[in-house]
Image 1 (tube, helix red, strand yellow):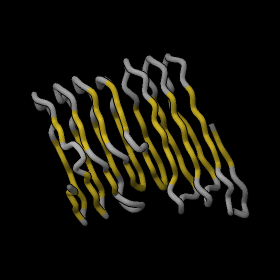
Image 2 (cartoon, one colour):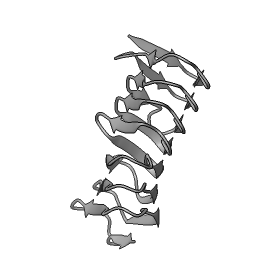
Image 3 (spheres, helix red, strand yellow):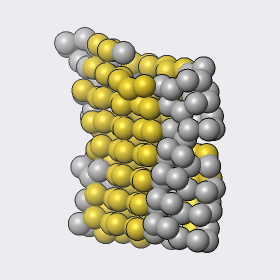
Image 4 (cartoon, one colour):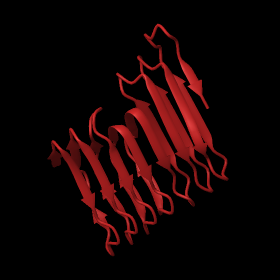
Length: 177
């Protein structure tokens, strides 16, 4: 099942008392995708969120009482905020062209795999870790010229791995941490 919207899709289910399960239903759009499940009392399960390389994807799941599980996320700019969430599982990782802004759950180990799109050149990741052990992996594509990583990884034992694949860029590649 797919929910599609050419101009964008917004799903707002803030302050809900029961679990929200969209299961394997994916959301696709040529425009932006916005999901706000802030203060959901129980677990939230979503399918893939795909805005291609032109639309932005925002997932706000701050202060949810259960685990946030979401399928693969793809967009131009991707924002995921799971601060104070039960835990976060992104099956299939995040693929973005320009940027990722990721805020990890405070009290759980987060692992997030980030890849840039095939046409991405300059990419920025802003990462905020929680109090536990977070693992962030970023892989740049063939046209990647730069990856910049900023943020505060938190108090745990955290790991950031950045990989630049063989680039066909004539200007070389730069990683700024």
